[in-house]
Image (tube, rainbow, N blue to C red; front, top):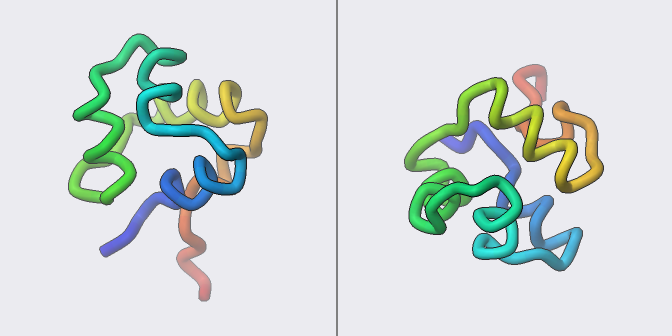
Length: 66
């Protein structure tokens, strides 16, 4: 089940997994797992990701009402 839209938002912002990993001080493999939805970032990390990408946190998640 795809929970987050991180891969889509990164593409929209023309940013890479490596760039995000560097910004967050995380391992690139961890960010890759988030992008493939095989793992999920914690809520605090999700807020940091939203800030780094200059988006609302809700833009990083798939809607549960669709």
